[in-house]
Image 1: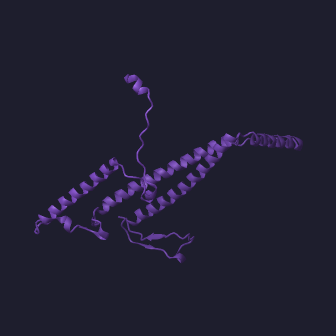
Image 2: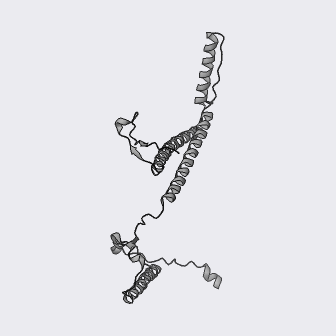
Image 3: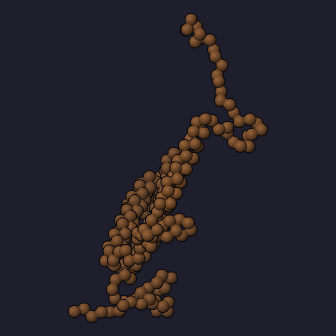
Length: 228
């Protein structure tokens, strides 16, 4: 009998939905949603209770250095900026490491650009090596020129669509890498200039009329020191 009772179809009990008149309040809260909300509420209340107890039993004569080395700007507790945290030698070493990393990434981008450019040239059928043909007379030169044009036309017409899409994607990648390499080169030049300015020695910034080829970038001149 139990097997027959299980064969009888039973109605599917669905969860109650939000009434039409209360649709503006969103989804109807179920019991499991209430449990999550109640636990979060009681957890916050317990935390506030502990903080109130700590504030009530706090020693007014208590002191620690965080009281004077931190503040609450804008209502957020933040430590004050540490001035002179690193020495000049440590800052110079950190600057050198940063310059080395930027130089390494710049060289890596240049190598990738060269590799991608050579692969695109091979894909298009334009080898980086140029073949020179010598003709005996003008007629033979015209024949060689017509043959080279016909080969280029055939190669241009015979490129499949999927390969053309990959080539277009590679060209976009190449342009993006060139732009990234230029930005890294400028960043490397600026960081190198900042590193040189941190070194010892008297220097001054040249005026625009003192620069032979002004390009908008600052130019500095160091005073010549006598070497022993």
